[in-house]
Length: 404
Image (cartoon, rainbow, N blue to C red; front, side, top):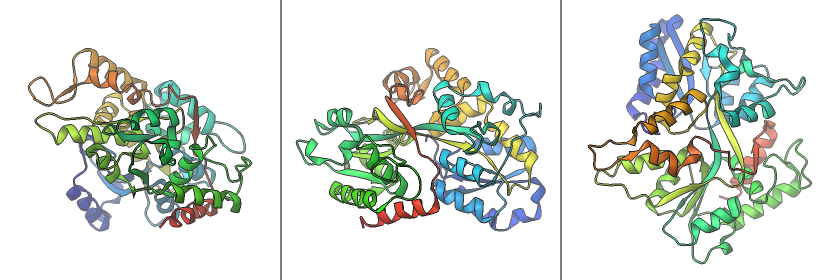
Protein backbone atom coordinates (compact mmCIF):
# COMPACT_ATOMS: atom_id res chain seq x y z
CA UNK A 1 0.00 0.00 0.00
CA UNK A 2 1.85 3.00 -1.24
CA UNK A 3 -0.28 5.67 0.38
CA UNK A 4 -1.38 4.93 3.91
CA UNK A 5 -4.56 6.53 5.18
CA UNK A 6 -3.55 9.04 7.86
CA UNK A 7 -5.02 8.53 11.30
CA UNK A 8 -6.47 12.04 11.09
CA UNK A 9 -8.49 11.10 8.01
CA UNK A 10 -9.90 8.07 9.78
CA UNK A 11 -10.82 10.16 12.81
CA UNK A 12 -12.50 12.77 10.64
CA UNK A 13 -14.49 10.03 8.92
CA UNK A 14 -15.82 8.78 12.22
CA UNK A 15 -16.52 12.31 13.44
CA UNK A 16 -18.57 13.07 10.35
CA UNK A 17 -20.16 9.64 10.56
CA UNK A 18 -21.37 10.46 14.05
CA UNK A 19 -23.07 13.74 13.35
CA UNK A 20 -22.78 16.24 10.55
CA UNK A 21 -23.78 14.03 7.63
CA UNK A 22 -27.15 13.28 9.13
CA UNK A 23 -28.38 16.63 7.84
CA UNK A 24 -27.76 15.75 4.16
CA UNK A 25 -28.58 12.02 3.77
CA UNK A 26 -29.46 12.27 0.07
CA UNK A 27 -25.91 13.31 -0.87
CA UNK A 28 -24.01 10.86 1.33
CA UNK A 29 -22.52 7.50 0.42
CA UNK A 30 -21.87 5.26 3.43
CA UNK A 31 -18.85 3.13 2.57
CA UNK A 32 -17.73 0.12 4.65
CA UNK A 33 -14.12 -0.75 3.87
CA UNK A 34 -10.95 -2.30 5.23
CA UNK A 35 -8.30 0.03 6.65
CA UNK A 36 -5.70 1.45 4.23
CA UNK A 37 -7.58 -0.04 1.29
CA UNK A 38 -8.34 2.84 -1.06
CA UNK A 39 -6.51 5.83 -2.47
CA UNK A 40 -8.29 8.61 -0.61
CA UNK A 41 -7.65 11.08 -3.44
CA UNK A 42 -10.07 9.00 -5.52
CA UNK A 43 -12.73 9.53 -2.88
CA UNK A 44 -12.17 13.27 -3.14
CA UNK A 45 -12.36 13.06 -6.93
CA UNK A 46 -15.65 11.14 -6.75
CA UNK A 47 -17.12 13.60 -4.25
CA UNK A 48 -16.26 16.53 -6.51
CA UNK A 49 -17.51 14.82 -9.66
CA UNK A 50 -20.88 13.81 -8.19
CA UNK A 51 -21.36 16.60 -5.64
CA UNK A 52 -21.65 14.21 -2.71
CA UNK A 53 -19.90 13.10 0.45
CA UNK A 54 -18.37 9.69 1.07
CA UNK A 55 -18.36 8.59 4.69
CA UNK A 56 -16.00 5.67 5.19
CA UNK A 57 -16.02 3.30 8.14
CA UNK A 58 -13.22 0.76 8.45
CA UNK A 59 -13.06 -2.80 9.79
CA UNK A 60 -10.31 -5.42 10.09
CA UNK A 61 -12.00 -8.61 8.89
CA UNK A 62 -14.74 -9.96 6.63
CA UNK A 63 -16.43 -11.38 9.70
CA UNK A 64 -16.65 -7.91 11.24
CA UNK A 65 -17.99 -6.58 7.95
CA UNK A 66 -20.64 -9.29 7.90
CA UNK A 67 -21.77 -8.39 11.42
CA UNK A 68 -22.03 -4.70 10.59
CA UNK A 69 -24.02 -5.28 7.41
CA UNK A 70 -26.42 -7.83 8.89
CA UNK A 71 -27.02 -5.90 12.12
CA UNK A 72 -28.76 -3.14 10.15
CA UNK A 73 -27.45 -0.49 12.55
CA UNK A 74 -26.01 1.61 9.72
CA UNK A 75 -27.40 1.91 6.19
CA UNK A 76 -24.24 1.09 4.25
CA UNK A 77 -24.43 1.84 0.52
CA UNK A 78 -21.24 0.05 -0.57
CA UNK A 79 -19.05 -2.49 1.21
CA UNK A 80 -15.94 -4.53 0.31
CA UNK A 81 -16.25 -7.99 1.93
CA UNK A 82 -14.11 -11.01 1.07
CA UNK A 83 -15.28 -13.64 -1.39
CA UNK A 84 -16.77 -16.18 1.02
CA UNK A 85 -18.54 -13.39 2.90
CA UNK A 86 -19.98 -12.12 -0.39
CA UNK A 87 -21.43 -15.58 -0.98
CA UNK A 88 -22.83 -15.76 2.54
CA UNK A 89 -24.41 -12.30 2.30
CA UNK A 90 -25.90 -13.25 -1.07
CA UNK A 91 -27.33 -16.55 0.17
CA UNK A 92 -28.89 -14.84 3.19
CA UNK A 93 -30.47 -12.08 1.09
CA UNK A 94 -28.35 -9.13 2.21
CA UNK A 95 -27.16 -7.98 -1.23
CA UNK A 96 -28.82 -5.96 -4.00
CA UNK A 97 -28.18 -6.43 -7.69
CA UNK A 98 -26.09 -3.84 -9.47
CA UNK A 99 -27.80 -1.83 -12.20
CA UNK A 100 -25.76 -3.59 -14.89
CA UNK A 101 -28.30 -2.89 -17.63
CA UNK A 102 -28.00 0.88 -17.26
CA UNK A 103 -25.91 2.33 -20.11
CA UNK A 104 -24.84 5.14 -17.77
CA UNK A 105 -22.63 2.65 -15.94
CA UNK A 106 -20.39 1.53 -18.79
CA UNK A 107 -18.01 -0.40 -16.54
CA UNK A 108 -20.74 -2.31 -14.75
CA UNK A 109 -22.30 -3.45 -18.02
CA UNK A 110 -18.98 -4.88 -19.29
CA UNK A 111 -18.74 -7.53 -16.54
CA UNK A 112 -17.69 -10.54 -18.61
CA UNK A 113 -14.79 -8.73 -20.28
CA UNK A 114 -13.46 -6.82 -17.26
CA UNK A 115 -11.46 -9.33 -15.23
CA UNK A 116 -8.18 -11.20 -15.71
CA UNK A 117 -8.58 -14.82 -16.78
CA UNK A 118 -7.21 -16.56 -13.68
CA UNK A 119 -9.57 -14.59 -11.46
CA UNK A 120 -12.48 -15.07 -13.83
CA UNK A 121 -11.96 -18.85 -13.62
CA UNK A 122 -12.18 -18.74 -9.83
CA UNK A 123 -15.33 -16.65 -10.01
CA UNK A 124 -16.95 -19.11 -12.40
CA UNK A 125 -16.09 -22.05 -10.13
CA UNK A 126 -16.88 -20.65 -6.69
CA UNK A 127 -19.23 -17.68 -6.92
CA UNK A 128 -22.42 -19.63 -7.55
CA UNK A 129 -25.95 -19.71 -6.21
CA UNK A 130 -26.09 -22.78 -3.95
CA UNK A 131 -29.56 -23.75 -5.20
CA UNK A 132 -29.38 -23.05 -8.94
CA UNK A 133 -25.64 -23.42 -9.53
CA UNK A 134 -25.69 -20.23 -11.57
CA UNK A 135 -23.13 -17.43 -11.26
CA UNK A 136 -24.11 -14.48 -9.10
CA UNK A 137 -22.23 -11.89 -11.17
CA UNK A 138 -24.76 -9.11 -10.81
CA UNK A 139 -24.14 -8.92 -7.06
CA UNK A 140 -20.40 -8.24 -6.77
CA UNK A 141 -17.42 -6.60 -8.51
CA UNK A 142 -13.93 -7.90 -7.58
CA UNK A 143 -11.79 -5.09 -6.20
CA UNK A 144 -8.38 -6.68 -5.48
CA UNK A 145 -7.23 -10.27 -5.36
CA UNK A 146 -4.29 -12.45 -4.42
CA UNK A 147 -3.23 -15.61 -2.63
CA UNK A 148 -2.37 -16.60 0.91
CA UNK A 149 1.39 -16.55 1.12
CA UNK A 150 4.51 -16.63 3.28
CA UNK A 151 6.60 -13.51 3.69
CA UNK A 152 10.11 -14.46 4.77
CA UNK A 153 13.44 -12.92 5.68
CA UNK A 154 16.48 -13.92 3.61
CA UNK A 155 18.92 -13.35 6.47
CA UNK A 156 19.06 -17.03 7.45
CA UNK A 157 20.53 -19.30 4.83
CA UNK A 158 18.09 -22.21 4.74
CA UNK A 159 14.82 -20.30 5.21
CA UNK A 160 14.12 -19.55 1.50
CA UNK A 161 14.82 -23.13 0.35
CA UNK A 162 12.79 -24.74 3.15
CA UNK A 163 9.80 -22.55 2.42
CA UNK A 164 10.03 -23.14 -1.33
CA UNK A 165 10.18 -26.90 -0.81
CA UNK A 166 7.59 -27.28 1.95
CA UNK A 167 5.05 -24.47 1.50
CA UNK A 168 2.82 -23.84 4.48
CA UNK A 169 4.28 -26.85 6.31
CA UNK A 170 7.39 -24.71 6.85
CA UNK A 171 5.37 -22.60 9.30
CA UNK A 172 4.50 -25.57 11.48
CA UNK A 173 7.59 -27.80 11.55
CA UNK A 174 10.72 -26.28 13.06
CA UNK A 175 12.67 -29.52 12.52
CA UNK A 176 12.92 -28.56 8.83
CA UNK A 177 15.45 -25.85 9.71
CA UNK A 178 19.10 -26.10 10.66
CA UNK A 179 18.86 -23.15 13.02
CA UNK A 180 16.35 -21.44 15.27
CA UNK A 181 13.69 -19.47 13.43
CA UNK A 182 11.02 -17.04 14.54
CA UNK A 183 7.61 -17.65 12.98
CA UNK A 184 4.54 -15.41 12.92
CA UNK A 185 0.90 -16.27 12.35
CA UNK A 186 -1.92 -13.92 11.41
CA UNK A 187 -4.35 -13.40 14.29
CA UNK A 188 -7.49 -14.17 12.29
CA UNK A 189 -9.02 -17.42 13.57
CA UNK A 190 -10.24 -18.72 10.24
CA UNK A 191 -6.90 -18.08 8.57
CA UNK A 192 -5.16 -20.02 11.33
CA UNK A 193 -7.37 -23.04 10.76
CA UNK A 194 -7.02 -22.78 6.98
CA UNK A 195 -3.23 -22.51 7.07
CA UNK A 196 -2.84 -25.51 9.35
CA UNK A 197 -5.01 -27.64 7.04
CA UNK A 198 -3.21 -26.52 3.88
CA UNK A 199 0.10 -27.29 5.60
CA UNK A 200 -1.04 -30.92 5.53
CA UNK A 201 -2.18 -30.69 1.91
CA UNK A 202 -5.82 -30.65 2.97
CA UNK A 203 -8.75 -28.59 1.76
CA UNK A 204 -8.98 -25.58 4.14
CA UNK A 205 -12.77 -25.99 4.30
CA UNK A 206 -13.00 -29.49 5.78
CA UNK A 207 -14.83 -30.10 9.05
CA UNK A 208 -13.84 -33.74 9.63
CA UNK A 209 -10.63 -35.71 9.23
CA UNK A 210 -12.21 -37.75 6.40
CA UNK A 211 -12.55 -34.63 4.26
CA UNK A 212 -16.20 -33.83 4.93
CA UNK A 213 -16.93 -30.12 4.49
CA UNK A 214 -20.43 -29.82 5.94
CA UNK A 215 -21.39 -28.57 9.37
CA UNK A 216 -19.18 -27.53 12.25
CA UNK A 217 -15.62 -28.73 12.94
CA UNK A 218 -16.00 -32.02 14.83
CA UNK A 219 -14.16 -32.85 18.04
CA UNK A 220 -11.56 -35.08 16.37
CA UNK A 221 -10.46 -32.43 13.88
CA UNK A 222 -10.69 -29.72 16.52
CA UNK A 223 -8.32 -31.61 18.85
CA UNK A 224 -5.99 -32.34 15.95
CA UNK A 225 -5.81 -28.65 15.01
CA UNK A 226 -5.29 -27.48 18.57
CA UNK A 227 -2.42 -29.93 19.07
CA UNK A 228 -0.87 -29.01 15.74
CA UNK A 229 -1.07 -25.28 16.41
CA UNK A 230 0.27 -25.59 19.94
CA UNK A 231 3.22 -27.64 18.73
CA UNK A 232 3.99 -24.97 16.15
CA UNK A 233 4.75 -22.61 19.05
CA UNK A 234 4.43 -19.42 17.04
CA UNK A 235 6.60 -16.53 18.17
CA UNK A 236 4.15 -13.80 17.20
CA UNK A 237 0.47 -13.39 16.48
CA UNK A 238 -0.38 -10.19 14.68
CA UNK A 239 -1.52 -8.45 11.53
CA UNK A 240 0.19 -5.44 9.95
CA UNK A 241 3.03 -5.56 12.49
CA UNK A 242 4.31 -8.91 11.21
CA UNK A 243 5.18 -7.80 7.68
CA UNK A 244 7.25 -4.97 9.13
CA UNK A 245 9.03 -7.37 11.47
CA UNK A 246 9.90 -9.74 8.63
CA UNK A 247 11.15 -6.80 6.59
CA UNK A 248 13.46 -5.67 9.40
CA UNK A 249 14.59 -9.22 10.21
CA UNK A 250 13.20 -9.54 13.73
CA UNK A 251 10.81 -12.24 12.44
CA UNK A 252 11.91 -14.91 9.96
CA UNK A 253 8.56 -15.60 8.32
CA UNK A 254 4.82 -15.19 8.65
CA UNK A 255 1.56 -16.30 7.07
CA UNK A 256 -0.35 -13.51 5.40
CA UNK A 257 -1.86 -12.27 2.14
CA UNK A 258 0.25 -11.48 -0.90
CA UNK A 259 -0.59 -7.78 -0.88
CA UNK A 260 1.04 -7.36 2.52
CA UNK A 261 4.41 -8.20 0.97
CA UNK A 262 4.12 -5.41 -1.58
CA UNK A 263 2.97 -3.07 1.15
CA UNK A 264 6.07 -3.90 3.19
CA UNK A 265 8.31 -3.59 0.13
CA UNK A 266 7.08 -0.11 -0.62
CA UNK A 267 7.41 0.94 3.01
CA UNK A 268 11.07 -0.13 3.05
CA UNK A 269 11.75 1.98 -0.02
CA UNK A 270 9.79 4.85 1.46
CA UNK A 271 11.70 4.74 4.74
CA UNK A 272 15.17 4.35 3.17
CA UNK A 273 15.90 7.52 1.19
CA UNK A 274 19.60 6.66 0.83
CA UNK A 275 18.95 3.26 -0.70
CA UNK A 276 16.70 0.39 0.30
CA UNK A 277 18.24 -2.92 1.35
CA UNK A 278 15.70 -5.61 0.50
CA UNK A 279 16.42 -8.77 2.48
CA UNK A 280 12.97 -10.31 2.47
CA UNK A 281 10.77 -11.97 -0.12
CA UNK A 282 7.47 -13.76 -0.62
CA UNK A 283 6.49 -17.31 -1.54
CA UNK A 284 3.10 -18.47 -2.78
CA UNK A 285 2.98 -22.21 -2.00
CA UNK A 286 2.05 -24.59 -4.79
CA UNK A 287 -1.05 -25.48 -2.77
CA UNK A 288 -2.75 -22.38 -1.46
CA UNK A 289 -6.02 -20.51 -1.21
CA UNK A 290 -6.86 -17.49 -3.32
CA UNK A 291 -8.97 -14.57 -2.19
CA UNK A 292 -10.65 -11.57 -3.69
CA UNK A 293 -12.45 -8.71 -2.03
CA UNK A 294 -15.42 -7.31 -3.92
CA UNK A 295 -17.55 -4.20 -3.95
CA UNK A 296 -21.17 -4.99 -3.13
CA UNK A 297 -24.36 -3.05 -2.49
CA UNK A 298 -25.99 -4.22 0.77
CA UNK A 299 -29.77 -4.23 1.11
CA UNK A 300 -29.28 -1.50 3.70
CA UNK A 301 -28.39 0.86 0.83
CA UNK A 302 -30.32 4.14 0.93
CA UNK A 303 -28.67 5.75 -2.09
CA UNK A 304 -28.74 3.07 -4.80
CA UNK A 305 -27.95 5.30 -7.78
CA UNK A 306 -24.96 6.84 -6.04
CA UNK A 307 -23.75 3.38 -5.00
CA UNK A 308 -23.77 2.24 -8.63
CA UNK A 309 -21.97 5.42 -9.65
CA UNK A 310 -19.28 4.81 -7.04
CA UNK A 311 -18.55 1.22 -8.08
CA UNK A 312 -18.66 2.18 -11.76
CA UNK A 313 -16.17 4.96 -10.94
CA UNK A 314 -13.83 2.54 -9.14
CA UNK A 315 -14.04 0.03 -12.02
CA UNK A 316 -12.87 2.66 -14.51
CA UNK A 317 -9.47 1.58 -15.88
CA UNK A 318 -7.63 4.80 -15.02
CA UNK A 319 -9.09 5.04 -11.53
CA UNK A 320 -8.48 1.36 -10.83
CA UNK A 321 -4.87 1.71 -12.00
CA UNK A 322 -4.31 4.66 -9.70
CA UNK A 323 -5.89 2.72 -6.85
CA UNK A 324 -3.75 -0.37 -7.50
CA UNK A 325 -0.59 1.73 -7.50
CA UNK A 326 -1.61 3.25 -4.19
CA UNK A 327 -2.69 0.08 -2.39
CA UNK A 328 -0.33 -2.59 -3.70
CA UNK A 329 -2.69 -5.57 -3.98
CA UNK A 330 -2.99 -7.40 -7.30
CA UNK A 331 -5.34 -5.73 -9.80
CA UNK A 332 -8.44 -7.55 -10.99
CA UNK A 333 -9.00 -5.69 -14.26
CA UNK A 334 -7.45 -6.61 -17.61
CA UNK A 335 -7.06 -2.94 -18.47
CA UNK A 336 -5.02 -2.30 -15.32
CA UNK A 337 -2.69 -5.23 -16.03
CA UNK A 338 -2.25 -3.85 -19.53
CA UNK A 339 -1.40 -0.39 -18.17
CA UNK A 340 1.24 -1.87 -15.85
CA UNK A 341 2.91 -3.74 -18.72
CA UNK A 342 2.75 -0.73 -21.04
CA UNK A 343 4.16 1.65 -18.45
CA UNK A 344 6.92 -0.82 -17.57
CA UNK A 345 8.03 -0.92 -21.21
CA UNK A 346 7.91 2.88 -21.34
CA UNK A 347 10.37 3.25 -18.46
CA UNK A 348 7.99 4.08 -15.61
CA UNK A 349 9.05 3.63 -12.01
CA UNK A 350 7.52 1.54 -9.25
CA UNK A 351 9.24 3.78 -6.72
CA UNK A 352 11.09 7.07 -7.17
CA UNK A 353 12.45 8.14 -10.55
CA UNK A 354 15.71 8.84 -12.35
CA UNK A 355 16.42 11.80 -10.04
CA UNK A 356 16.15 9.92 -6.73
CA UNK A 357 18.87 7.90 -5.10
CA UNK A 358 16.41 5.25 -4.00
CA UNK A 359 14.37 3.98 -6.94
CA UNK A 360 12.98 0.87 -8.61
CA UNK A 361 11.77 0.75 -12.18
CA UNK A 362 8.41 -0.80 -12.85
CA UNK A 363 10.00 -3.18 -15.34
CA UNK A 364 12.48 -4.47 -12.75
CA UNK A 365 9.68 -4.76 -10.21
CA UNK A 366 7.47 -6.87 -12.50
CA UNK A 367 10.40 -9.06 -13.56
CA UNK A 368 11.43 -9.73 -9.98
CA UNK A 369 7.88 -10.16 -8.66
CA UNK A 370 5.79 -11.59 -11.53
CA UNK A 371 3.27 -12.87 -8.99
CA UNK A 372 2.01 -9.32 -8.56
CA UNK A 373 0.11 -9.45 -11.86
CA UNK A 374 -0.46 -13.23 -11.71
CA UNK A 375 -0.77 -14.39 -8.09
CA UNK A 376 -1.96 -17.94 -8.75
CA UNK A 377 -0.69 -18.73 -12.25
CA UNK A 378 2.11 -20.99 -10.97
CA UNK A 379 0.10 -22.84 -8.33
CA UNK A 380 -0.78 -26.52 -8.65
CA UNK A 381 -3.91 -26.37 -6.52
CA UNK A 382 -5.89 -23.29 -5.57
CA UNK A 383 -8.68 -23.44 -3.02
CA UNK A 384 -11.13 -20.75 -1.99
CA UNK A 385 -12.45 -20.35 1.54
CA UNK A 386 -16.12 -21.26 1.51
CA UNK A 387 -19.02 -19.74 3.49
CA UNK A 388 -19.36 -21.31 6.91
CA UNK A 389 -21.88 -21.26 9.72
CA UNK A 390 -21.64 -19.03 12.76
CA UNK A 391 -20.95 -22.14 14.82
CA UNK A 392 -18.03 -23.09 12.56
CA UNK A 393 -16.53 -19.62 12.94
CA UNK A 394 -17.04 -19.80 16.70
CA UNK A 395 -15.13 -23.09 16.77
CA UNK A 396 -12.30 -21.45 14.85
CA UNK A 397 -12.21 -18.78 17.57
CA UNK A 398 -12.14 -21.48 20.27
CA UNK A 399 -9.20 -23.14 18.51
CA UNK A 400 -7.38 -19.81 18.30
CA UNK A 401 -8.11 -18.91 21.92
CA UNK A 402 -6.70 -22.26 23.05
CA UNK A 403 -3.29 -20.98 22.01
CA UNK A 404 -3.32 -18.09 24.47
